[in-house]
Length: 141
Ligand SMILES: [Zn+2]
Image (cartoon, rainbow, N blue to C red):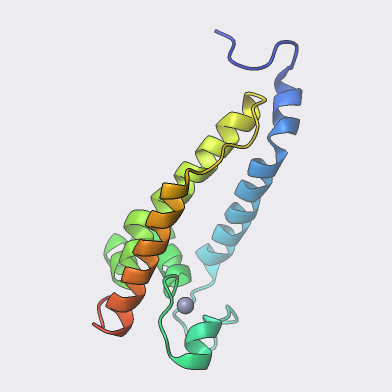
């Protein structure tokens, strides 16, 4: 079965999908760095969260680099403790966004729009996560 545009071969599909593939390459490069550089070590050259460093406030993404490091090393428990919402919602959400973007581009379709309700849910989850981390000290490690 042929799902792509008529007359567009594999090369044309890959060219049409260069942006999501480039993003995957960038994420893969960053993940490669995290395989060998431990952001938990004192003096790590990986930058800390600027908001946390300047204000002491935990943002929704605080711990995401250390979570990714733990995840890449198969330590799900540590990943959970470092950024639970990032692990159970952020990673699957990012994969979903990237997957639908790649699929559309490979089919020659325009980049799919994210329904407004999805953006609203992301904002609410981020606000609740910030409150939980800063006011209730949940997941602030
Ligand atoms: Zn942060």
